[in-house]
Image (cartoon, rainbow, N blue to C red):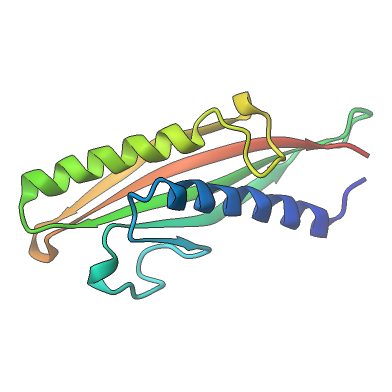
Length: 146
C-alpha cells in the first residue's frame, strides 16, 4: 500500500511535468507552479502567464491490482493586451497549447496517456484591466501498485 507521501510526490511529479511542458512551448512569459491568479504578483513584462495548481484528489478503495487515484488541478491562463481582438486571439492560441500539452498525455511518468484530460471551466474578460483569464480544469488518473 502506498503512503500519503508517495501520493503527494506522484501528484507533484504530474504538476511539475505540466509546468515544464507549458514552459517548453515558449508561449508563456512565466509558468507558476502551486499558485492560482491573485496569489502571486507577476510583473506585466512576463505576460502571458500560466498558473498550475492542484485543486483536489480522490482515492479509490485499494484492490489486489493496486490503488487508483484521480488528481484534479487547474491551469489558468492570464493574458494582458490592450487590443481586445488580439487578447482574445492570444487566449485561444494559449488554451489550444495547454489542451495539446495536457490532454491525453502521459504526465510525470505516472499517468497513462488516456487517463488525462483538460476542459475549459471559465473565461473572465476584464476590459478595465485589459486582461483575459481562462481557467481549465484538468484531471489525471493513475494507479499505484504495491
